Length: 356
Image 1: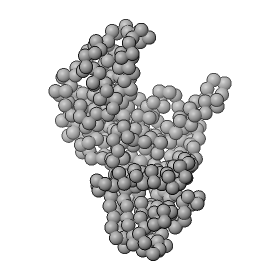
Image 2: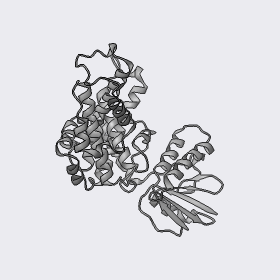
Image 3: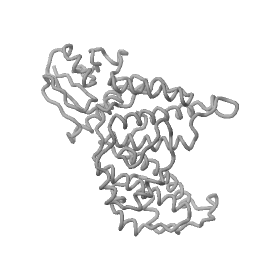
Image 4: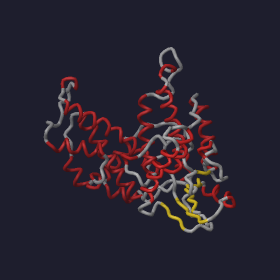
């Protein structure tokens, strides 16, 4: 019988399997997406914490191993080492101990990820007087994350920095220096996300008179102008994503246990020094242990904010005070987006699922 092991650990760990493949196989990402759909269907199409954990595991799989064996019992220790779930020929999903997951057996997590989440969340609950939802899985450990290539990250950083500045300039009623930026930082206009593409198309279409009046009253503006300003505001927030990417490749330091707010330093540095300086600087990333530490803090704190906003009757005036302000909530979302994109190299910016 053929048993498939879906492992979240990046490194290939020897075992008597027939073959294996990682995310460098061009067919692997699509296979994992199809497998998530299959599991959703065989699992009853009901979003429970168990289903969420399984889908999270599959979407974060780094390697698939195939064994032609009669039993997987002797491979329990190996499966724990690679943090795998098994897919049995009859369609059952098993944890490393061979227990059926949809019969309420636990979904495995790497011990390093579990230990980090326990410690970081205890610190958040202490410092922010907040509680982390118990169903939230830990961020993957340093053994389970394979970041994107530095040049790709540098190029995305350029786009975020440039379009953040363009968004701010448009809302301020300033002339947009598109021609100069395209000449000095051409790579910033490559591989754009949906908002960046839509903004650029609107600006270059000539359908809207620019620069906008600095005394513009949006209530009196056309739908097209209101839509452009809304896009500009979203792009301005992308500066926070640029700040987080800058942190991951060592351009700036961010204080532990806090949510800073000074992204203009890094976007200004990019605009002042140009794309060649950015590419020259981005040669690698901070240690994965540090990256995972920051990722766990940001995602856990963001879920505090989500939890508060899902239960508004318990927070606000004369009730329990909100822990995370609206501004910090928006910032955490941008930071989460940047880290999730960095750590999920098989998904585009607009495809990143921030629920996992």
